[in-house]
Length: 302
Image 1 (cartoon, helix red, strand yellow):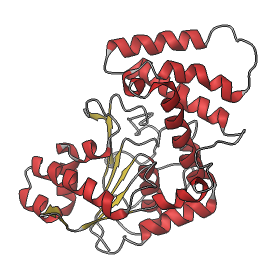
Image 2 (cartoon, rainbow, N blue to C red; image 1 turned 30 degrees about the vertical axis):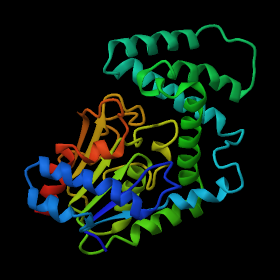
Image 3 (tube, helix red, strand yellow; image 1 turned 120 degrees about the horizontal axis):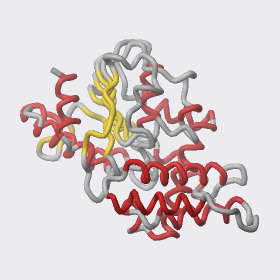
């Protein structure tokens, strides 16, 4: 059992709990140190030795399809969701991107996509113009269109499997439960891991001092929000504090201010654009290394 349980996001299937702990814990210790708690930072990660935090690893559960060569393929029914996901990211950029150039580009691309419909080419072909538009924005520009498609498809494939496949969902929750015990005070989730962590807290059945969600898609109505458990979504009733951190350019964090979506948020949920992760807005270790993350964790462990 661990005092701090860490829950990773998508695309970690080629890693391991040990390698992810070696990535995450120095960053979390750095955030705690920036928050003025050097002794706790040393306890979290000192001389390469992990302390009271453990990674709830589930990436290997997504290797089953990949071993057959179709791990990132969508079904015909899932392609429209992929288009909706990409469009929601594009709308987010038009409204909230930190650079005026990206906001203008996203707005121009949305106007073009809303123009007269062309010849019907099928749902997969329909996604191409949206991906072309995304690839012109800074968060996706380094990928290019082909890799942007892979990013969207992999994200949707793993998120959809977790939210729709009961066996996958239970297996992932079991991995989290293995590390949660009476001494657990903090659960930290990044990306899809924030959805997993949120649901895990609902299952606890006992008080928890702190939930931290980083780059969370919990506000993504097209794919995530209506499929979380339990329904309707709400702040877990025995959660004392929930800190949700988002970079303004992190398009995965579809709606960074979650307070209006989760009843019971008053006095519990702190949410909004609160950190700047630079050129990698969705990077987990960048979120963990922030003073805001470290201060929340340190307060919960005090």
